[in-house]
Structures are given as C-alpha cells and as structure tokens.
Length: 452
Ligand code: PFF
Ligand code: NA
Image (cartoon, rainbow, N blue to C red; front, side, top):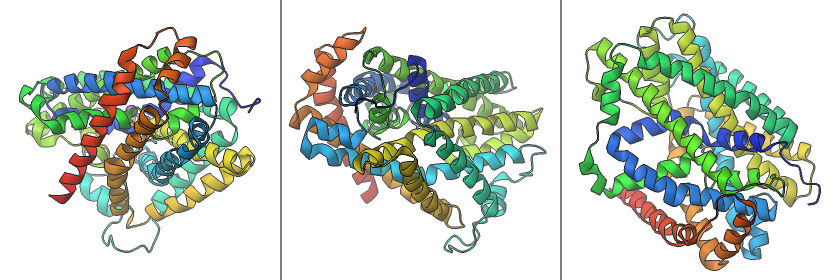
C-alpha cells in the first residue's frame, strides 16, 4: 500500500479523468439526447443534474479513491467489509463494456481509412450494414469480418501496451498525447462545420427551446442518465483513477474541473454535430428534423454522407473518425484499468499478469462482437448495461455509502482537508436524498418502458 503507483502530475490525473469522461457519449449521445429532450430547454435539467448528482458523485468517488487508496472493490471493502461486492459489480459492468467498446473504435479506424476517396460510395447505410459489417445473415456466428478483426487487434495492442506500462508511464502518457490532440482536431472540425452553408439552421434546431418538455419526467431521467454516463460515474473508473492521487491532492476542485471540461466538450460536440446536420439538410433539401440521428447511425451512416458532400472530404472524414478513435481509446483504457487494478490487488499478482489475464480475456470475448452477429449482440448488451447496470450500480453506491456505512460526513471532512473549495451540507443532501431518489425513479422508468 505504501508504494502504490501515483500520477506524475496533477495535470496528468486531470487529463486521464477527462480522457475517461470525454468519449462517444459526448460526441454521438449528447447531441441527439439534448435535441430530443427539449433542445435549448434541456440545458436546465442537464445543468441541474450536473450540479446535484454529477459533480457531487464525482467528488465522492475521488474522495473514496484518495482516502482508501485501492481499486474499487478494495476501497469499498475498506469502507465496510460487506460492501466489497458493490465494487465488483461496477468492475463487472466495466469489464462487459470493455468487450464491445473496442469494436466501435475498430470501426472508426477503418472509417478513417475509408474517408480517403469516400470509399463508402453513395449509399452509406447499405455500405455500413451490408458491405462493411456483412450483416446479411445476422443470426450466424460464422465468419469473422477481417476488416473488423484487424483494427480490433490493433486497438487491444495499443490499450494493453499503455496499461502494461503502468499509471505514470502508461495511462498518463497516453492521455497526455490523446487528449490535447483530440481537442485540437475537434476544434478544427467544429470551426469547419459551423462555416458550412446551412449550419445556422442546424444550430437553430439544436438550441430552439421546447419548454413544454420541462415537465416531462422522462426528460429529467434523460438528463441524469446523460450526466452519469458522460462523467463515467458508477463504473469504478473514477475511484480507481483517484486511488493513484498523491496524498496532497485537491479533490473538490479537480471534480469541478473534470465535470465542466466534459460538459464543455459535450456542448462543443452538439454545436459541431448540428451544424453538420444543418449542412446536410440544406444539401438534400430536407428539414433538420429529418436528418437527426445519434449513436452508431450518426457516426457510421449519417456522417459519411455529410463528409461526402463536404469540400476536402478525405481530410475532414479522417479528422472526424480520428477524433472518435482518440476519444474512444482514452475511455477504453480507463474502463479496462478498473478490473486490472481489481484483479491485481485481489489475487496479489503483478501488473503484467493482471493485464495479460484481464485484458486477454476481454480481448478474446470481444472477438464475439467482431463477427456477423456482432451488431445485434452489441446493441442488446449495450441496452441492458445502460438501462439497468449503471443505474443500479449508482443506486447501490449512494445507498451503501450514505445510508449503510453513513460515511458522508466523514468523507466531507476528508475532502475539505485537502481541497480549495469547501463542501457544505448541500453536498450530503445531493448524495443522501436527490441522487438515490432520481436513480430509483430512473430504474422504474426504464423497467416500465421495457414492459410497454
Ligand atoms: N464517459 C464516456 C463517454 O461519455 O463517452 C463513456 C464511458 C466510458 C462510459 C467508460 C463508461 C465507461 F466505462
Ligand atoms: Na462524457
């Protein structure tokens, strides 16, 4: 415990935490979610969720990691013996995500290459589903798709390489390269997007507030859901990362910086994506509402079409998919570190062994998503993880800490000792009441929509 690995610098930790937070959730999840949930009016529930749940939970997770200096399972067991399983539950979710997240990064790598000469042709949807993924017979688990398999292996090599090198020389170095590069590339893309003809219509559609949505419970659930996912909360990640903080480290200020940086990136992505959608709508004589998409469809079907219509399409296609790759890799490293740290501590093995065992197993399982049935499987797993896994993990977490271990007061003192910004009663109210109520409500809503 004494010679636990540490981050080299405060900036190193912050970049790693931002690297985990900034991911596909910012680029393809936030813009569509905000648009569907009231556009400009969504910012109210969104900010509310950020301030009442996102940042308070981030502060709590940083405090746990900093105070107990262990992987998530170990940290929870140090809070109270009976709570170790909460950590394993979160680690398990991260493990599952790490078996399909790299598939998407692999696709993005291939699409960065396809951008040159816009190899997806005129019908981008058919290209993606039929030509690229060869989903003609989605039931079969037969042939691997080599164009997915090779980039997938490349992703694993990069991820396990950095993880194997440890905290300071591996994870920190990776994020110091990836995140500044990502920000520069993304700024270039956004500036280009907002200067395209039609961009303003896209932005209009994005920011136009629909205040009637504000009274819809689903919109509030969407806001909290977006914040949890986007900040990588309740995935064991932030506890693991903060367990490598030196003793003299600010907690609260670091959490605010991470939270605002992630939201800024999200807003930037919303602007870039909707400017591009506005351009596409103008080119194809459609309304913006007809071209809006999120997720896989946005990135691999709509964006290729937009890119084809842009001047210098090869360059901008490459930059767009490179940004997905960079955002994805830094998140992927963070998810995988949760179980590597967990296994390393539980079974007292070296980092190298934990990386080989944990990462190797995840890599092998990921092959199941790399074949023809992959997309459907990925969708199903992703749906259950997002609707139940994460909400439950967050609920277990706050209830265990606020109500069973009754640790909030203790944590507040701990954070206040080392931080510039001092926590008050509001922080305990957010975690003891608001967050568990919202998460409970969210679970019920998700269950309800499953049944109807
Ligand atoms: N926070 C990341 C995003 O917004 O894209 C997503 C994410 C990363 C979720 C890692 C879960 C995770 F374990
Ligand atoms: Na995010």
